[in-house]
Image 1 (cartoon, rainbow, N blue to C red):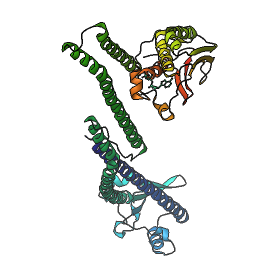
Image 2: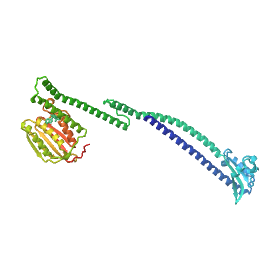
Image 3: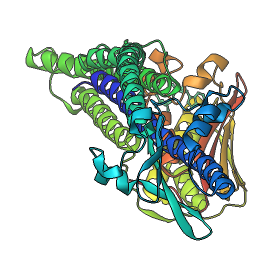
Image 4: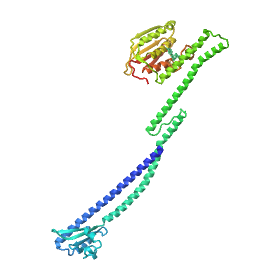
Length: 466
Ligand code: ADP
Protein backbone atom coordinates (compact mmCIF):
# COMPACT_ATOMS: atom_id res chain seq x y z
CA UNK A 1 0.00 0.00 0.00
CA UNK A 2 1.51 3.32 -1.00
CA UNK A 3 1.61 6.26 1.39
CA UNK A 4 -0.98 8.02 -0.75
CA UNK A 5 -3.48 5.14 -0.63
CA UNK A 6 -2.95 4.77 3.09
CA UNK A 7 -3.70 8.44 3.60
CA UNK A 8 -6.91 8.35 1.51
CA UNK A 9 -8.05 5.17 3.25
CA UNK A 10 -7.43 6.67 6.67
CA UNK A 11 -9.31 9.86 5.83
CA UNK A 12 -12.31 8.03 4.32
CA UNK A 13 -12.59 5.51 7.16
CA UNK A 14 -12.34 8.29 9.72
CA UNK A 15 -15.15 10.24 8.09
CA UNK A 16 -17.37 7.14 7.69
CA UNK A 17 -16.73 6.13 11.28
CA UNK A 18 -17.61 9.62 12.55
CA UNK A 19 -20.84 9.65 10.52
CA UNK A 20 -21.92 6.26 11.86
CA UNK A 21 -21.13 7.26 15.44
CA UNK A 22 -23.00 10.56 15.24
CA UNK A 23 -25.99 8.86 13.52
CA UNK A 24 -26.19 6.20 16.23
CA UNK A 25 -26.02 8.84 18.95
CA UNK A 26 -28.92 10.79 17.42
CA UNK A 27 -30.98 7.60 17.01
CA UNK A 28 -30.52 6.71 20.66
CA UNK A 29 -31.29 10.18 21.95
CA UNK A 30 -34.47 10.52 19.83
CA UNK A 31 -35.78 7.24 21.28
CA UNK A 32 -35.08 8.34 24.84
CA UNK A 33 -36.62 11.77 24.29
CA UNK A 34 -39.86 10.30 22.91
CA UNK A 35 -40.18 7.81 25.80
CA UNK A 36 -39.71 10.50 28.37
CA UNK A 37 -42.17 12.95 26.87
CA UNK A 38 -44.86 10.21 26.56
CA UNK A 39 -44.62 9.33 30.26
CA UNK A 40 -44.77 13.04 31.25
CA UNK A 41 -47.95 13.57 29.25
CA UNK A 42 -49.59 10.45 30.72
CA UNK A 43 -48.81 11.45 34.29
CA UNK A 44 -50.31 14.90 33.71
CA UNK A 45 -53.54 13.55 32.25
CA UNK A 46 -53.94 10.95 35.01
CA UNK A 47 -53.60 13.60 37.68
CA UNK A 48 -56.19 15.76 36.05
CA UNK A 49 -58.74 12.94 35.70
CA UNK A 50 -58.20 11.70 39.19
CA UNK A 51 -58.78 15.16 40.65
CA UNK A 52 -61.98 15.63 38.69
CA UNK A 53 -63.35 12.19 39.59
CA UNK A 54 -62.65 12.66 43.30
CA UNK A 55 -64.42 15.99 43.27
CA UNK A 56 -67.35 14.51 41.38
CA UNK A 57 -67.76 11.60 43.77
CA UNK A 58 -67.47 13.76 46.84
CA UNK A 59 -70.16 16.03 45.47
CA UNK A 60 -72.59 13.40 44.21
CA UNK A 61 -71.90 10.43 46.48
CA UNK A 62 -72.14 8.10 43.45
CA UNK A 63 -71.08 7.87 39.80
CA UNK A 64 -74.54 8.58 38.51
CA UNK A 65 -74.59 11.07 35.66
CA UNK A 66 -70.84 10.95 35.22
CA UNK A 67 -71.11 9.79 31.62
CA UNK A 68 -73.12 12.84 30.57
CA UNK A 69 -70.94 15.18 32.60
CA UNK A 70 -67.68 14.08 31.05
CA UNK A 71 -69.12 13.87 27.55
CA UNK A 72 -70.46 17.36 28.05
CA UNK A 73 -67.09 18.59 29.24
CA UNK A 74 -65.39 16.90 26.32
CA UNK A 75 -67.54 18.81 23.88
CA UNK A 76 -67.19 22.14 25.66
CA UNK A 77 -64.82 24.24 23.57
CA UNK A 78 -63.69 26.09 26.71
CA UNK A 79 -62.50 22.89 28.39
CA UNK A 80 -59.93 21.98 25.87
CA UNK A 81 -58.03 19.75 28.28
CA UNK A 82 -60.92 17.24 28.15
CA UNK A 83 -60.78 16.87 24.43
CA UNK A 84 -58.79 13.72 24.17
CA UNK A 85 -58.27 12.36 20.75
CA UNK A 86 -59.25 8.67 21.02
CA UNK A 87 -56.30 7.62 18.90
CA UNK A 88 -53.97 8.92 21.63
CA UNK A 89 -55.68 7.94 24.87
CA UNK A 90 -58.39 5.52 25.77
CA UNK A 91 -60.08 5.96 29.15
CA UNK A 92 -62.92 4.29 31.06
CA UNK A 93 -64.29 4.60 34.58
CA UNK A 94 -65.47 1.50 36.40
CA UNK A 95 -67.38 1.42 39.68
CA UNK A 96 -66.20 -0.63 42.60
CA UNK A 97 -67.83 -3.72 41.06
CA UNK A 98 -65.84 -3.32 37.89
CA UNK A 99 -68.81 -2.19 35.78
CA UNK A 100 -68.20 0.54 33.23
CA UNK A 101 -69.81 3.83 34.30
CA UNK A 102 -68.05 6.05 31.86
CA UNK A 103 -66.66 5.38 28.40
CA UNK A 104 -66.35 7.61 25.35
CA UNK A 105 -67.80 4.64 23.47
CA UNK A 106 -71.44 4.42 24.58
CA UNK A 107 -71.92 0.63 23.97
CA UNK A 108 -69.36 -0.18 26.63
CA UNK A 109 -71.48 1.38 29.38
CA UNK A 110 -72.72 -1.16 31.91
CA UNK A 111 -70.30 -3.85 30.78
CA UNK A 112 -68.34 -5.75 33.36
CA UNK A 113 -64.61 -5.80 32.97
CA UNK A 114 -64.66 -9.56 32.59
CA UNK A 115 -66.70 -9.27 29.40
CA UNK A 116 -63.88 -7.46 27.68
CA UNK A 117 -61.57 -9.43 25.50
CA UNK A 118 -58.36 -8.50 27.22
CA UNK A 119 -59.82 -8.28 30.71
CA UNK A 120 -56.69 -9.47 32.50
CA UNK A 121 -54.58 -6.95 30.76
CA UNK A 122 -57.13 -4.28 31.56
CA UNK A 123 -57.27 -5.24 35.22
CA UNK A 124 -53.56 -4.74 35.52
CA UNK A 125 -53.92 -1.18 34.32
CA UNK A 126 -56.64 -0.12 36.73
CA UNK A 127 -55.97 2.79 39.08
CA UNK A 128 -58.26 2.85 42.13
CA UNK A 129 -60.23 6.07 42.85
CA UNK A 130 -60.08 6.42 46.64
CA UNK A 131 -62.48 8.70 48.53
CA UNK A 132 -62.03 8.83 52.32
CA UNK A 133 -59.97 5.65 52.34
CA UNK A 134 -62.59 3.76 50.39
CA UNK A 135 -62.14 2.56 46.86
CA UNK A 136 -65.17 3.83 45.01
CA UNK A 137 -64.12 2.99 41.49
CA UNK A 138 -61.33 2.33 39.08
CA UNK A 139 -59.92 4.39 36.31
CA UNK A 140 -58.74 2.48 33.33
CA UNK A 141 -56.35 4.34 31.25
CA UNK A 142 -54.61 3.21 28.19
CA UNK A 143 -52.15 5.43 26.62
CA UNK A 144 -51.66 4.92 22.98
CA UNK A 145 -48.54 6.94 23.10
CA UNK A 146 -46.22 4.01 23.50
CA UNK A 147 -47.45 2.48 20.29
CA UNK A 148 -47.65 5.93 18.78
CA UNK A 149 -44.14 6.75 19.93
CA UNK A 150 -42.98 3.43 18.59
CA UNK A 151 -44.40 4.44 15.31
CA UNK A 152 -43.00 7.94 15.66
CA UNK A 153 -39.58 6.73 16.66
CA UNK A 154 -39.73 4.22 13.84
CA UNK A 155 -40.41 6.98 11.34
CA UNK A 156 -37.84 9.25 12.92
CA UNK A 157 -35.27 6.49 13.05
CA UNK A 158 -35.80 5.52 9.47
CA UNK A 159 -35.46 9.14 8.37
CA UNK A 160 -32.34 9.50 10.53
CA UNK A 161 -30.96 6.33 8.98
CA UNK A 162 -31.87 7.63 5.54
CA UNK A 163 -30.20 10.97 6.25
CA UNK A 164 -27.24 9.09 7.66
CA UNK A 165 -26.87 6.98 4.52
CA UNK A 166 -27.15 10.02 2.27
CA UNK A 167 -24.73 11.89 4.53
CA UNK A 168 -22.45 8.89 4.48
CA UNK A 169 -22.38 8.77 0.71
CA UNK A 170 -21.80 12.53 0.43
CA UNK A 171 -19.10 12.63 3.12
CA UNK A 172 -17.51 9.52 1.63
CA UNK A 173 -17.28 11.21 -1.75
CA UNK A 174 -16.02 14.47 -0.23
CA UNK A 175 -13.46 12.60 1.89
CA UNK A 176 -12.34 10.64 -1.15
CA UNK A 177 -11.95 13.79 -3.22
CA UNK A 178 -10.24 15.62 -0.40
CA UNK A 179 -8.00 12.62 0.22
CA UNK A 180 -6.98 12.50 -3.43
CA UNK A 181 -6.24 16.23 -3.57
CA UNK A 182 -4.46 16.38 -0.21
CA UNK A 183 -2.47 13.22 -0.74
CA UNK A 184 -1.39 14.42 -4.17
CA UNK A 185 -0.15 17.66 -2.62
CA UNK A 186 1.60 15.61 0.04
CA UNK A 187 3.12 12.92 -2.13
CA UNK A 188 3.91 14.89 -5.26
CA UNK A 189 7.06 16.48 -3.73
CA UNK A 190 8.00 13.07 -2.32
CA UNK A 191 7.68 11.59 -5.79
CA UNK A 192 9.90 14.32 -7.17
CA UNK A 193 12.35 13.70 -4.35
CA UNK A 194 12.43 9.97 -5.09
CA UNK A 195 13.09 10.66 -8.76
CA UNK A 196 15.83 13.12 -7.81
CA UNK A 197 17.44 10.65 -5.39
CA UNK A 198 17.38 7.96 -8.10
CA UNK A 199 18.95 10.40 -10.53
CA UNK A 200 21.69 11.26 -8.00
CA UNK A 201 22.18 7.54 -7.41
CA UNK A 202 22.83 7.20 -11.14
CA UNK A 203 25.59 9.76 -10.83
CA UNK A 204 23.77 12.89 -11.96
CA UNK A 205 25.03 15.27 -9.30
CA UNK A 206 23.56 18.39 -10.86
CA UNK A 207 20.03 17.33 -9.86
CA UNK A 208 18.24 19.98 -7.79
CA UNK A 209 14.60 20.24 -6.66
CA UNK A 210 12.52 23.38 -6.34
CA UNK A 211 11.59 23.54 -2.62
CA UNK A 212 7.77 23.44 -2.35
CA UNK A 213 5.00 21.91 -0.27
CA UNK A 214 4.74 21.87 3.50
CA UNK A 215 7.53 23.12 5.76
CA UNK A 216 8.73 19.58 6.48
CA UNK A 217 8.94 18.64 2.83
CA UNK A 218 10.54 21.99 2.05
CA UNK A 219 13.30 21.48 4.58
CA UNK A 220 13.77 17.94 3.26
CA UNK A 221 14.21 19.22 -0.30
CA UNK A 222 16.54 21.94 0.94
CA UNK A 223 18.59 19.34 2.79
CA UNK A 224 18.62 17.22 -0.37
CA UNK A 225 19.81 20.16 -2.48
CA UNK A 226 22.49 20.94 0.05
CA UNK A 227 23.57 17.31 0.05
CA UNK A 228 23.82 17.14 -3.75
CA UNK A 229 25.73 20.45 -3.82
CA UNK A 230 28.13 19.01 -1.26
CA UNK A 231 28.40 15.75 -3.21
CA UNK A 232 29.07 17.64 -6.43
CA UNK A 233 31.70 19.72 -4.68
CA UNK A 234 33.35 16.62 -3.19
CA UNK A 235 33.29 14.95 -6.58
CA UNK A 236 34.82 18.03 -8.18
CA UNK A 237 37.53 18.15 -5.52
CA UNK A 238 38.19 14.46 -5.99
CA UNK A 239 38.55 14.64 -9.76
CA UNK A 240 40.63 17.80 -9.51
CA UNK A 241 42.87 16.06 -7.00
CA UNK A 242 43.36 13.06 -9.27
CA UNK A 243 44.19 15.40 -12.15
CA UNK A 244 46.58 17.39 -9.92
CA UNK A 245 48.35 14.27 -8.70
CA UNK A 246 48.70 12.98 -12.26
CA UNK A 247 50.09 16.36 -13.25
CA UNK A 248 52.52 16.42 -10.32
CA UNK A 249 53.79 12.94 -11.12
CA UNK A 250 54.18 13.57 -14.82
CA UNK A 251 57.20 15.93 -14.53
CA UNK A 252 59.42 13.68 -12.36
CA UNK A 253 58.41 10.61 -14.35
CA UNK A 254 59.29 12.36 -17.62
CA UNK A 255 62.66 13.39 -16.21
CA UNK A 256 63.38 9.85 -14.93
CA UNK A 257 62.23 8.21 -18.18
CA UNK A 258 64.31 10.64 -20.28
CA UNK A 259 67.47 10.11 -18.26
CA UNK A 260 67.08 6.31 -18.22
CA UNK A 261 66.48 6.29 -21.98
CA UNK A 262 69.63 8.32 -22.58
CA UNK A 263 71.63 5.92 -20.38
CA UNK A 264 70.15 2.91 -22.18
CA UNK A 265 70.92 4.38 -25.60
CA UNK A 266 74.47 5.10 -24.47
CA UNK A 267 74.13 8.88 -24.82
CA UNK A 268 74.82 9.17 -21.11
CA UNK A 269 76.92 6.94 -18.93
CA UNK A 270 75.53 5.78 -15.61
CA UNK A 271 77.76 7.87 -13.36
CA UNK A 272 76.72 9.21 -9.93
CA UNK A 273 76.29 12.64 -11.55
CA UNK A 274 73.88 11.40 -14.23
CA UNK A 275 71.93 9.34 -11.74
CA UNK A 276 71.60 12.23 -9.28
CA UNK A 277 68.69 13.97 -11.10
CA UNK A 278 66.86 10.62 -11.16
CA UNK A 279 67.39 10.27 -7.44
CA UNK A 280 66.18 13.87 -6.90
CA UNK A 281 62.95 13.15 -8.71
CA UNK A 282 62.46 9.88 -6.81
CA UNK A 283 62.93 11.78 -3.54
CA UNK A 284 60.46 14.42 -4.69
CA UNK A 285 57.89 11.75 -5.64
CA UNK A 286 58.37 9.93 -2.36
CA UNK A 287 57.78 13.19 -0.51
CA UNK A 288 54.72 13.89 -2.59
CA UNK A 289 53.24 10.48 -1.85
CA UNK A 290 53.98 10.84 1.88
CA UNK A 291 52.45 14.32 1.98
CA UNK A 292 49.36 13.12 0.15
CA UNK A 293 48.95 10.25 2.55
CA UNK A 294 49.22 12.55 5.59
CA UNK A 295 46.87 15.04 4.03
CA UNK A 296 44.18 12.50 3.21
CA UNK A 297 44.43 11.03 6.72
CA UNK A 298 44.09 14.48 8.27
CA UNK A 299 41.20 15.42 6.00
CA UNK A 300 39.37 12.25 6.91
CA UNK A 301 39.94 13.10 10.58
CA UNK A 302 41.97 9.90 11.02
CA UNK A 303 45.42 11.35 11.63
CA UNK A 304 46.96 9.44 14.53
CA UNK A 305 48.22 12.01 17.04
CA UNK A 306 50.59 11.27 19.86
CA UNK A 307 49.50 13.98 22.27
CA UNK A 308 51.99 15.29 24.84
CA UNK A 309 53.13 18.64 26.12
CA UNK A 310 55.32 20.23 23.47
CA UNK A 311 57.97 22.84 24.13
CA UNK A 312 57.20 24.96 21.09
CA UNK A 313 60.13 27.32 21.46
CA UNK A 314 62.61 24.48 21.69
CA UNK A 315 61.00 22.78 18.71
CA UNK A 316 61.22 25.93 16.58
CA UNK A 317 64.82 26.66 17.60
CA UNK A 318 65.75 23.11 16.53
CA UNK A 319 64.14 23.66 13.12
CA UNK A 320 65.98 26.97 12.72
CA UNK A 321 69.25 25.17 13.49
CA UNK A 322 68.37 22.64 10.84
CA UNK A 323 67.88 25.46 8.31
CA UNK A 324 71.07 27.22 9.44
CA UNK A 325 72.89 26.83 6.12
CA UNK A 326 69.93 28.09 4.07
CA UNK A 327 69.53 31.05 6.44
CA UNK A 328 73.20 31.88 6.18
CA UNK A 329 73.14 31.54 2.40
CA UNK A 330 70.45 34.20 2.20
CA UNK A 331 71.95 36.16 5.07
CA UNK A 332 68.66 36.17 6.93
CA UNK A 333 68.63 37.40 10.53
CA UNK A 334 66.28 35.48 12.81
CA UNK A 335 64.66 36.79 15.94
CA UNK A 336 62.63 34.75 18.43
CA UNK A 337 60.68 36.80 21.00
CA UNK A 338 57.82 36.47 23.46
CA UNK A 339 56.88 33.87 26.05
CA UNK A 340 56.27 30.41 24.84
CA UNK A 341 54.21 27.85 26.66
CA UNK A 342 53.89 24.13 26.32
CA UNK A 343 50.65 23.37 24.54
CA UNK A 344 49.42 19.81 24.15
CA UNK A 345 49.99 18.28 20.77
CA UNK A 346 51.84 15.79 18.60
CA UNK A 347 55.46 17.01 18.46
CA UNK A 348 56.21 15.33 15.11
CA UNK A 349 53.13 16.75 13.37
CA UNK A 350 53.73 20.21 14.79
CA UNK A 351 57.36 19.98 13.68
CA UNK A 352 56.17 19.17 10.16
CA UNK A 353 53.90 22.26 10.21
CA UNK A 354 56.66 24.60 11.34
CA UNK A 355 59.21 23.06 8.95
CA UNK A 356 56.82 23.81 6.08
CA UNK A 357 56.23 27.38 7.28
CA UNK A 358 59.93 28.12 7.96
CA UNK A 359 61.02 26.49 4.70
CA UNK A 360 58.51 28.65 2.81
CA UNK A 361 59.61 31.79 4.65
CA UNK A 362 63.28 31.17 3.81
CA UNK A 363 62.55 30.26 0.20
CA UNK A 364 60.48 33.40 -0.35
CA UNK A 365 62.69 35.78 1.67
CA UNK A 366 64.97 38.22 -0.05
CA UNK A 367 68.69 38.13 0.65
CA UNK A 368 69.54 40.01 3.85
CA UNK A 369 65.98 39.82 5.07
CA UNK A 370 64.62 39.36 8.56
CA UNK A 371 62.70 36.50 10.02
CA UNK A 372 60.79 37.21 13.20
CA UNK A 373 59.13 34.49 15.26
CA UNK A 374 56.96 35.72 18.11
CA UNK A 375 55.13 33.83 20.86
CA UNK A 376 52.23 35.13 22.86
CA UNK A 377 49.30 33.91 24.93
CA UNK A 378 45.89 34.38 23.45
CA UNK A 379 42.44 33.07 24.32
CA UNK A 380 40.03 32.43 21.51
CA UNK A 381 36.35 31.67 22.22
CA UNK A 382 37.25 31.48 25.90
CA UNK A 383 39.85 28.79 25.22
CA UNK A 384 43.35 29.47 26.45
CA UNK A 385 46.00 29.08 23.80
CA UNK A 386 49.35 30.09 22.34
CA UNK A 387 49.97 32.12 19.25
CA UNK A 388 53.09 31.73 17.14
CA UNK A 389 53.54 34.26 14.37
CA UNK A 390 56.23 33.84 11.73
CA UNK A 391 56.92 37.03 9.82
CA UNK A 392 59.35 37.08 6.93
CA UNK A 393 60.54 39.91 4.75
CA UNK A 394 59.92 38.23 1.43
CA UNK A 395 58.04 39.15 -1.71
CA UNK A 396 54.64 38.62 -0.06
CA UNK A 397 51.60 36.93 -1.52
CA UNK A 398 49.40 38.82 -4.01
CA UNK A 399 46.02 39.67 -2.51
CA UNK A 400 44.03 37.53 -4.94
CA UNK A 401 46.11 34.46 -4.06
CA UNK A 402 45.77 34.76 -0.28
CA UNK A 403 42.40 32.91 -0.05
CA UNK A 404 43.88 29.96 -1.99
CA UNK A 405 47.34 29.45 -0.50
CA UNK A 406 46.03 26.71 1.83
CA UNK A 407 44.50 24.78 -1.11
CA UNK A 408 46.16 21.60 -2.32
CA UNK A 409 48.66 22.08 -5.16
CA UNK A 410 48.05 25.81 -5.17
CA UNK A 411 51.14 27.74 -6.14
CA UNK A 412 51.36 31.45 -6.67
CA UNK A 413 53.95 31.02 -9.37
CA UNK A 414 53.40 27.55 -10.84
CA UNK A 415 56.73 27.17 -12.67
CA UNK A 416 59.06 28.87 -10.21
CA UNK A 417 57.51 27.34 -7.08
CA UNK A 418 57.63 23.82 -8.52
CA UNK A 419 61.21 24.31 -9.63
CA UNK A 420 62.13 25.44 -6.13
CA UNK A 421 61.12 21.99 -4.86
CA UNK A 422 57.74 22.60 -3.26
CA UNK A 423 55.00 20.03 -3.66
CA UNK A 424 52.23 22.64 -3.34
CA UNK A 425 50.95 20.67 -0.34
CA UNK A 426 52.96 22.35 2.43
CA UNK A 427 50.33 24.85 3.57
CA UNK A 428 47.41 22.45 2.99
CA UNK A 429 49.13 19.99 5.33
CA UNK A 430 49.91 22.75 7.83
CA UNK A 431 46.25 23.78 7.97
CA UNK A 432 44.90 20.22 8.30
CA UNK A 433 47.40 19.33 11.04
CA UNK A 434 46.68 22.50 13.00
CA UNK A 435 42.94 21.93 12.69
CA UNK A 436 43.43 18.35 13.87
CA UNK A 437 44.94 19.91 16.99
CA UNK A 438 41.86 22.11 17.42
CA UNK A 439 43.89 25.14 16.37
CA UNK A 440 43.79 27.77 13.65
CA UNK A 441 46.21 29.05 11.05
CA UNK A 442 45.89 32.40 9.30
CA UNK A 443 47.95 34.48 6.94
CA UNK A 444 48.53 38.17 6.35
CA UNK A 445 50.68 39.45 3.58
CA UNK A 446 51.98 42.69 2.17
CA UNK A 447 53.33 42.46 -1.38
CA UNK A 448 56.94 43.43 -1.56
CA UNK A 449 57.23 43.59 2.21
CA UNK A 450 56.63 40.16 3.61
CA UNK A 451 54.23 37.57 4.89
CA UNK A 452 53.10 36.63 8.36
CA UNK A 453 51.65 33.23 9.17
CA UNK A 454 49.99 32.92 12.57
CA UNK A 455 49.39 29.58 14.24
CA UNK A 456 47.10 29.41 17.26
CA UNK A 457 47.03 26.26 19.36
CA UNK A 458 44.86 25.57 22.40
CA UNK A 459 46.88 24.85 25.54
CA UNK A 460 44.79 21.80 26.30
CA UNK A 461 43.32 19.60 23.65
CA UNK A 462 39.57 19.13 23.85
CA UNK A 463 38.97 18.00 20.29
CA UNK A 464 39.34 14.23 20.31
CA UNK A 465 40.61 12.52 17.25
CA UNK A 466 38.27 9.87 15.83
P1 ADP B 1 54.97 24.69 -1.69
O1 ADP B 1 55.29 23.50 -0.91
O2 ADP B 1 55.01 24.49 -3.17
O3 ADP B 1 55.71 25.90 -1.24
P2 ADP B 1 52.83 25.60 -0.12
O4 ADP B 1 51.50 24.98 0.03
O5 ADP B 1 53.76 25.52 1.02
O6 ADP B 1 53.45 25.02 -1.42
O7 ADP B 1 52.58 27.11 -0.51
C1 ADP B 1 51.65 27.50 -1.46
C2 ADP B 1 52.06 28.79 -2.16
O8 ADP B 1 52.00 29.86 -1.22
C3 ADP B 1 53.46 28.76 -2.64
O9 ADP B 1 53.47 28.40 -3.99
C4 ADP B 1 53.96 30.16 -2.46
O10 ADP B 1 53.84 30.88 -3.65
C5 ADP B 1 53.06 30.77 -1.47
N1 ADP B 1 53.74 31.01 -0.18
C6 ADP B 1 53.81 30.21 0.88
N2 ADP B 1 54.51 30.75 1.90
C7 ADP B 1 54.94 31.95 1.45
C8 ADP B 1 55.70 33.01 2.02
N3 ADP B 1 56.21 32.92 3.26
N4 ADP B 1 55.94 34.10 1.27
C9 ADP B 1 55.43 34.18 0.02
N5 ADP B 1 54.70 33.23 -0.58
C10 ADP B 1 54.44 32.13 0.11
